Image 1 (cartoon, rainbow, N blue to C red):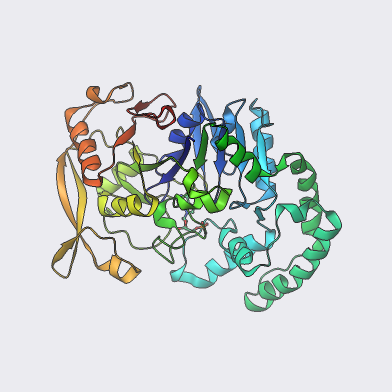
Image 2: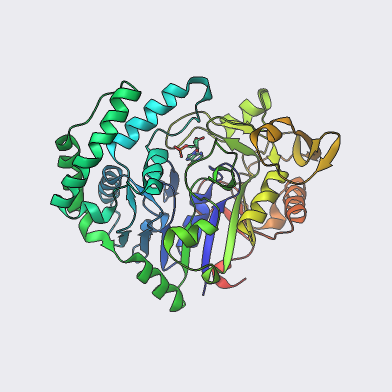
Length: 430
Ligand code: IMP
């Protein structure tokens, strides 16, 4: 039962896309189980760049089943656009399957996301403004519209008419925003319905059958563990479950079916949006890493906040997601620094702890305890074996693994698909 879950072990943007892409080559099925088009994966294959926001990375392999599970917040316009762009790039998208139970991001969700953020002013979350939070709010309030609702035009229009009364009242009376008419939403949405209808399937059945038949199934987490609605740095989080358990609830498989959980760890830390960030760098080193690493959002274009690697935080991800493997990315980006710092503990009231605190105030007060490492130099992009890495980089990676008590399976040394050292292959049972 090789079901492998890949999650981001930090605040997202760890470079999951390429690890997923490598594993997708061996996968019979690749699944998105949470989040929506707030995620953005850039894949570079044969010199061609593909930006995927919703469709699983496995779409670039012709015979791979690609599933959008019911835990995903699905913007149908974005999905249709992504399908069109892939088709224009010569990619066959016939392997896509969409859960009928996935919740739809509606235009009023996007407007409310914007209005709510603007109203919060300096206390804003810094969301991607894609309607993610309001969509999940409706899901949990049991007032959401799902893919299945879209497939029946009369039913969809009647539900939309009811819902719009309440949404327009909120938009107009509370926020002073622009209301919607039923037709301006229904008309494009019912067009999307016809484009998406052929892809809608019973994804729970498909995935459980695949796993039971011994096929390789890959679950592609979006965002990162520290953005989880329950375990992340609340309220500066997303509204879904990027932890590994999210794969079970967002795709419809039992926890006993998961065989391995790969945590993707960037060799430093980045974050978009607001919220405390203990190891954040406000100096030239931070600017240098941002430039070297092209750390600007795939989805929003925003410059990302940069800091040293925080192992207290990653250790917490090991706990909440049960990581069995590490994928360490961006070792090449750090080449050129003389010295590096790694946070190995938090000082709280004079005592050093490795426990990640609950609550923003507590996290805002910790003082990172650093261990210094020698840097490494040179172009690492052609390195294919761990032993070929500069000694200082080997020491850095070995320390991360030892501190976390989790073996390293992948090391990213460049943006291309092949620029990844594979130490152990989870699908090969290594
Ligand atoms: P939302 O998911 O758009 O509601 O945004 C909530 C928080 O999650 C904000 O701080 C976003 O910047 C952050 N976020 C959402 N998606 C991603 C991602 O894919 N990478 C990194 N941060 C993200």
